[in-house]
Length: 116
Length: 113
Image (cartoon, rainbow over all chains, first blue to last red; front, side, top):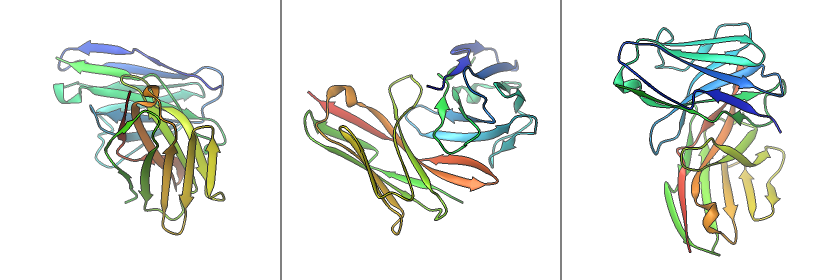
């Protein structure tokens, strides 16, 4: 089946620094990738939708200058948390869908970000 | 905006009993409803899905029902086992230019041995 690889799985960074998270589709072309944030014991909150070759579409309340998304190829999307603060600490998870779009997402393994 | 409500938030059942999780969606245009199982610290895994042209779908011990008129869909797990313990999320498709999903708030299922 479809596989999505996400790295790193865990990262600890200092306040004020930036962190890049990568999401790769390994055996299919992901025309669309999605980035979610998940707080402990809470649901997946969609942050943005990333389409290859175009600007990401951000959900209401998500700062696009803080959460930079790049989808430069059909197999790679990156999320950069800029000038991270402790409140950005969370579980970030990507998912990808192929051209059909409505056949169920494949999720990455997630990245636990801790900002100290 | 569009939203998906999910109930209950926690559910404990005895091993062998059935578990039912219910979701309600708001967008009448939603036409695809997947269910995900997420074990602690792991990625969500698709366990079953249903499209709007079908009222029920079953896969071994798992079934999903859909009532489009009422905008309800439910997950049914029969003969529960301890390994079914996890958080389950429902989702509904939203097509607002880009096809995407809105997730329910999750149900923490605990199967007691």
